[in-house]
Structures are given as structure tokens and as C-alpha cells.
Image (cartoon, rainbow over all chains, first blue to last red; front, side):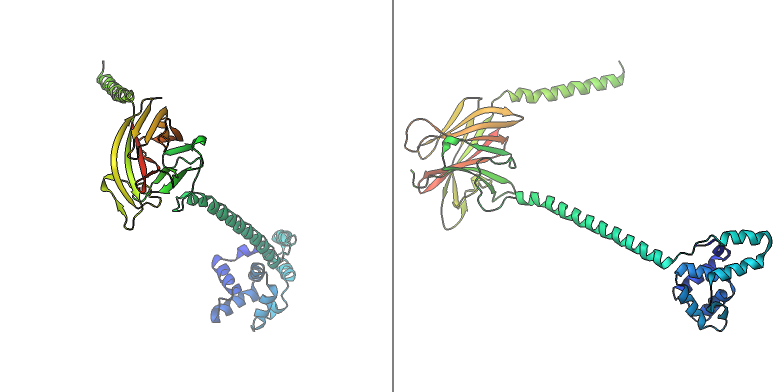
Length: 199
Length: 150
């Protein structure tokens, strides 16, 4: 915001912002339009605030007091103000006003919007990757939960506090089962010898 | 000697006594409690209340406690338990590591010949039961639930 807008009171700035946002109606709107017609700082503030100089101009076309603003030109207005002040102040104000670059706030907003959008997309992507990785990690213990199906294993885990290594000479008829206990939440280990058809 | 030193000394002495007691018990050999269970297939599920924590049925729904035995588990000395089907179950305590007991379970041959067939090397925490079963007996099988008592 330019240094000249600092000549406006905070209340005026708030009302000008409300005007730019289209929130003012009736007497309030007329009052602000009066400021814009008579106060170069107010006009410049609104123009910089909204970056919609044309819209401000159109808005003032509806006002009978806004003729001076219909063909409002910021550079001309500033120069006119400088002429009025004269002397040392005149020189200082000109020095301040002259180098002030005119930047399209709309363009800057579009640029910021694009950057913001890219950042938001990157954050969303990172969040989705984090969630996927976390879910994958959490699936592991779920797979360890004992299932009712009988799962034979030659070397089993120590989950129930019991490790079993089958002796190779025991033959194929010996299996180890890790089964959910019927009467407790623990896992039971069974070394099972298949003697179907035996004694 | 200050009062604080006396209290500290008493605490240290008490801790030494408390810490010494388990060491004395640790010299005693562990034991294996063996429950011999007859498991049969049946229409109506039935579990002998003396069994306590029900072992996995593996398709045998009727479980009856035949007997309960206690075997000493001296290190590297086999302990045996005769089973109702004429065979013999053997446990050999081979090591104790970090309060876990390593035993080898064996069973005598079904044909009555001499010797034992090794089934598995089992490392179990104290009081954690494991089961060895499947030995044919009277239309069903025998299941042995073993719990090592330190």
C-alpha cells in the first residue's frame, strides 16, 4: 500500500475496504464515493486495494459527484496533488510518488493464488502419501492376529511365549500349529503328530 | 553413624536378602506339569472342567483329562511319562536361557520297539503351556498339555 494512504484514518480505510468488497449501500456508499471524488488518497487506496481500477471508475459513474473520477487517472491525480502542496513538501511528495511502481494487484493475486495452489497440492500429496504409508505399516500387526485356519509351520514365532523347531528326523507327519485358544485370548502351540491309521 | 546412614544400610541389607532368596530357589530343577488328555470326535462338544484352559481341539470336540503328571526337568536328563496307549513320552531339558527353558520332546515308536523319536525342540517361557498330541488312542487321540514350572 502506498505511503499516501497513511493519510487516511483507520475508519476510512475500513469503509473503503467494505466499499471495494461491495458491502456498502445507500448513504454509506454515497459517502465513500464522495471521498473517492474528492480525496486522491482514498481513490488510490481503493485502486491499490482491489486492483480493480476500472471497477472503481464504473462505480463512480453512477454518482453525480463523481465526474472527476470518471476519467480518473492515478498519475494525473498524484501530480495534481503534488502541484498543490508546493515548496519542500512538494519536492518530497513528488519524490515519493514518482518512483512508486504501478503494479497490478490482480496479477499479483493470480500469481500468489497459483503458488498457493501448488503448495496446497504438494501438502495434500504429502499427506496422502503419509496416510498410505501409515496404513501399510498398521496392516502388519493385523496380519499377525491368529486366524482360525490351521497354518502349519516348521519354525514358528515366539508370540505365545513358546518357540518350536521341528526335528528333521520327525518326518512329514509332524506339524506345528499356532491356534487361537478357545478359552483365552492367547495363542496355543500344538506339536501335532498325524497318526491317522496308526495304533 | 548418622540416622540416614543407618536407614540406608538397612535398606541395602534388606535388598540383598530379598535378592538372595530367588537364587536359592533357582538351584532347584524345574518341573514339567503334563496333562494327558483323551480327545475324541463327538456330536456334542464336551470339555472336562479339570482341564482348565482348553487346548486347541483340532477337530476333536470332546476332551477328557486322563491323568496329570509332574516330571522333573534336571538339565540333560531325560524324564519320561508312560501314556495310556502303551507308548512313552519323553522330555529332555537341554538349556535354560534368559528364564526360558529349552526342551526336546520325543515319543516312543507306535510299534512298541525301543528308543524314542524326536519330535521338536521347544523353547518355552515358564508357565506358558504348549501341546504335543495326535497319538492314537481308543478311537481318538492323546493330547499332552505341558507347562514348565520353574
